[in-house]
Each structure stands twice: as C-alpha cells, then as structure tokens.
Amino acid sequence: MELGSILQFLENRSILVTGATGFLAKIFIEKILRVQPNVKKLYLLLRASDTNSAMLRFNTEIIGKDLFRVLKEKYGGDNYYFNSFISEKIRVVAGDITRHDLGIINDDNNLLQEMWHQIDVVVNLAATTNFDERYDVSLALNTLGAKRVFDFCKKCNRFKVFLHVSTAYVSGEKEGLILEMPYKMGETLNGTRGLDIDEENQLVDATLTHLNHHNYSQEHIKSSMKDLGIQRARKYGWPNTYVFTKAMGEMLLGQLVKEDQTVPLVIIRPTIVTSTYKEPFPGWVEGLRTIDSLAVGYGKGKITCFLGDPKSIVDVIPADMVVNAMIVAMVAHADQRYNNNNNNNNNNNNNNKDNIIYHVGSSVSNPVEFKCLQDYGIRYFAKKPWIDKNGNPVIVGHVTVLTSMATFQRYMALRYFLPLKGLEIANTVCCKYFQAVYLELNRKIKFVMRLVELYAPYLFFKGFYDDTNTEKLRRAANESGIENETNIFYFDAKIINWDDYFTNTHIPGIVKHVFKNN
Image (cartoon, rainbow, N blue to C red; front, top):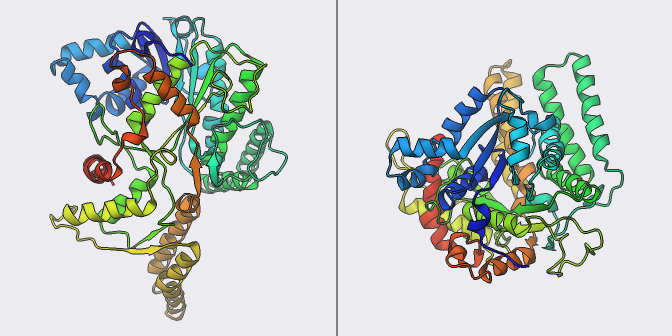
C-alpha cells in the first residue's frame, strides 16, 4: 500500500459529511479545518426541514461547541475572521439520508447540481446508536440510509472515495480473534437462514400498518417497534437492534459495490469511542458512552454495584485517533475501485483492494481490563469527589462487583425483588395505599433489568478485534516519508498509557463536559 501526502490530498477537496452533529463528525470537521485550511468546501448534511433550521443546529450543536476553541484561537480569537473562514469553507445542507437524494431540496441555486459537480469524498456518519431504537427508525437510518448515501455517491462527477463509519460490534457476541472481514448478504451470526433486507423492510411496514389500523397509542407503537427490533436481531444472532441494522448496512454496501464498481468504498469499524487523547485538546467528550454512564453513576454516588467480568477486555479508543484513522484510510483508498478478480478471503494480501474493513481499537495492540476501568474511577473520585447541587462532596467507596449474571440475579432478588414482593402484598392488604410507591419501584426495577439485558453482552465480552489492516495502514503512513504527517494523523493505540489517560484525561473530561448535563 502506497500513501502520498494526506495534507496535499485534502487541499482543494470538497467533502460531504452526513450526520454532521454527531460526536465523531464534529471532531472530523474540526480536524480538517484546522490542519488543512485550504480544503475547498465541507458540505455538512444536517437533519432539518429547511436551511434556517439546519443553520440553527449548526450554530448551536457544532460550531458553538468548546471543541472549536483551538481553531478560533488560530484566528486570534477574532470572530470576524473566524466567521469569514467558516462561511467560506462550510456549506450547511438541510436533508435526511432516509430520503431520495438525501432529502436535499434543489433550490434556485441548484444546490444538488453543485454538490454532484464538486464533491470528491463522502463520509457517512449518520446513524442512530441506541441499542433498542425503534426498528423502523434504525432500519431506515443504519441500513437503508447507507444505500441512499451510496446512490448519492454514484451521481458525483469527480468522486474519489466513500468512507462509511460502522461499528466493530457488528460482530455480536463472537469470541476470540475477530477478523476485519466483510459480511456477505444474508449472512447471520447464528447460522439461521432467511435474512433478507427487503423482507425486513416489508415486515416493518406491515407491522406499522397493523398497529395504526387498530388505533394503538403512539407509546404502544413505539414500544412494539422497539421490541420488534430486538426480536429480529436475536433471531439472527445479534444482541441488539443497533448492531443488527449496522451489520445489514454493511451487507447492503458490500453488495452494491460489487454491482456498481464505480464507487470506491472503505468501512471503518471503531470500538468504544472515548474522549480525545490529544487534539484539539485532551479530554473533549460529548454525551455518554457505554462505560461513561458507569463513571457518572459511580461519581454521583448512585451506583452500589458493578456488573461485569473483571478479566474481560474493554476495547476503547480515543475519538481523535478514530478520526485520524478515518482520514488516512480515506486517502489510501481514493480511486480504488472494487476488483472482482481478487480473493476476498485473503486477509493478509496487502494489495487486495477488497480489504476495505478497518477495526480501530485497542484490544489486540494495547488491551485494558474491565477491572482497571473500575479502579481508575474509584481512585479518581476518592481524590476528587463530585460536588453535588448543595455544595457537598459525594463520598464514594468500593462497590460490590458482580462477576456473573447468576450473581447479579441473586443480588437483585435479595435487594429488590423480595422487598418489591413485600410491598405488593402490603399494597393489596392496605387497599392500594402504597400503589404509587409500588408502581414507581416496579418501573425502576424493570428499567434496570432492561439495561442489563441490553448491555450484558458487552460486560462479559470475550472477543478481541484484529487490527491487521489498520496496522498496515499506520505503517504505510509512517513509511510515506512525508515530514510531520505521522504526528498530525496519529492513531497507534500502543502509545496510550491507560492509567494516565483515564485518570488525567478521560474522567476529568467526563466531569467537565458531561457531569453537569447528567
């Protein structure tokens, strides 16, 4: 694999970014603007009904974030010059990837024609990441939305590469070494036959028609569609709707690129994405990742136990490293069309253009155990306790560690199910006097059990993500000989000292950027 100058490739390029308000998307946008101000244009697709609504979202959810402060400082903190630069380099586009032509309105300025003529690269980051999202929503965004973006790419005259961001956890609950291999159309994790994306879409339509015909409430319809997603995912071996629909999105893209070889495709599969390691500054994070919800709950004194195998490896990777890997992969695969003659099973062939999958993670190169993450949180909040709304420090201590689902079930039975049963009896004897208390406690217990059901596969995960392709990509970048670019586009997880990163960067970042909102 040969790789030229990344900065030179980015110069005078026009890039479409879907899902532009997302966590990774914002870091990608900031990085491009900061390291290559001579990029021609970034078209940012935001889900909105019109341009004014899209601009409002852009100003509040993207450019108004603290993430862009380094870029602003580059312009001396002068709002006039910074705003002029942003106006020149960014075009905010209202749209929706679930619709034809991405829902872009072809106004008097012929926006669609402009984009088809100008765009060199498309980066698809639009997705719903909720584990138990409504099946209709998740299928439309994560699966069929990927096809809509692919169809858009085909209309771009100067097209170089389509970079699709998926997730490493399309692997489901596989154990052992998980290779960077694509999914074939209809492939399932448990061997169950009959997975057909068109039929899944028809099932969704039929179910919605049935529910609406019988005038069910919107809440009932929402719950039914969530349950349907989980049922369909588990039928074919995936633990939740999110990873199931992302896997089907990959299948669909793989099939499309074989049928139409004009669109170079590369798929990035990040693991659990955490706060920035170094750029634009350490510790920037937004929203709660899976492991961060534990830190927030523990730091605020709301968690009395941890569930998970202390020896299991938690595959985490800082967000800026993911973005750097995305950019390097984008450059490496520009103009590389699908080759029907290549053997897709040869995962060690450096020149095989079908090896379009990149795992971006740490479980092979620099693994960290679940127990270590617990220890980092305990040590941090013991030294720097969270101050509650009354100005009092929240004193935390060691918590009970439940190392199996059986242990968890016993814990819940003794601490919650038995008291709930007693409350139910008392409520019956006292003519529903404790009804409100009983219903609220029952609701909370059901909520916790639902969360455990969704997250348990990851708390006891026994897989390791092979990163052979990603390592080859990193070496190609190192061997390119372009001065300083290796330092600009770093993504080697081996350089991370996890103890230092979590205690001095990630957890402080969560406290600063996330705690106040949760």
